[in-house]
Amino acid sequence: MIRDDRPAHQRVDLDRTEALRLLGSVSMGRIVFTRQALPTVRPVNHVLDGGDIVIRTPEGSSLTSRTQQGDDSGVVVAYEADAIDPDTHLGWSVVATGYARLVTDPGELIRIRALLKPWAACPTTDHAVRIRPDLITGVLLTVRKKAPENI
Image 1 (cartoon, rainbow, N blue to C red):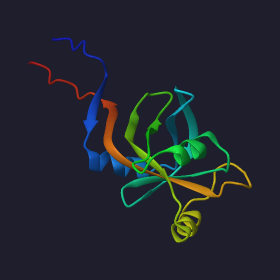
Image 2: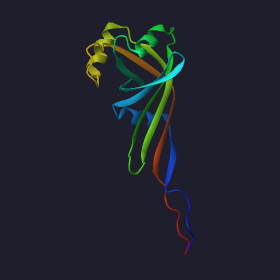
Image 3: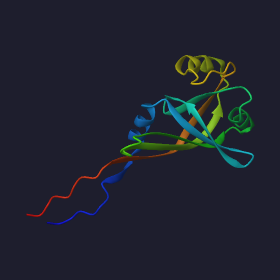
Image 4: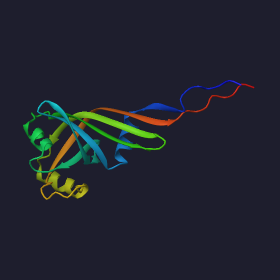
């Protein structure tokens, strides 16, 4: 009998299409941006809109202020979402990196407000940020298939 000493789990890289599909299957994630030249992470809810990630932000938040200060290309951010079982450690994780811009068109803001309700009560969550992902990486954490036993 040959023993298989490999770990029981394996990591499988996902293509962009599958990573975006999984990202769209959940409503919560974490946005990473810089604040005073240091990385800052905030939990937010999101919706996918034409391949972009859209989140809502309150007036005066660090992210709202940061995107208002950005130039025409926006500010660099990362967005991460996952669904990983705490007991089995199986699931997936997706990270999208790209440029975030404050949504300023009144008609688009009305449409986004109808698509995405804030996850936490905040009366001033009137702003929206659109993230256009340039780089999307994802991994599937799954059970490794057992090697066939030699007879």
